[in-house]
Length: 177
Image (tube, one colour):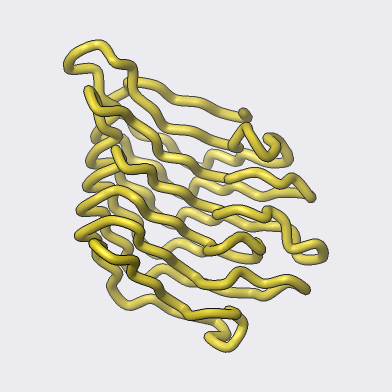
């Protein structure tokens, strides 16, 4: 893991770069919470967070939480996650929101490359994505830009650089999402 934040609140981070770290079991950057009562990770603001791989097969941003404490109400302004243009890695989502990631907001970010089942996988609820830019295909593109496996969640004004690059669909809502 390049950077792991746990049970943190009311913090601001600007111009953070996390590059060339992680592997298939260790994400670049994780947000998580302990199981101690009232110990969430919440109300943190990330301005221009940038995660970029060389050829690592790693999730770049992973929001976790647990049944006691969610990762809740965090804001990402201009988040950029970028897989490898040549190989297409990672072979997993660039951004993953687990079932205990809720009410997180993403504004005007960019998600590029990756060859997993989706570039963003959202298993939490009440998360919002505004003016998110998706795209830039590699030799082995992702099946879809964003996949909602639970819900409700919101996607406003997505921009697909090339909507034909996905092998299945730009957006997927699974049953119950």
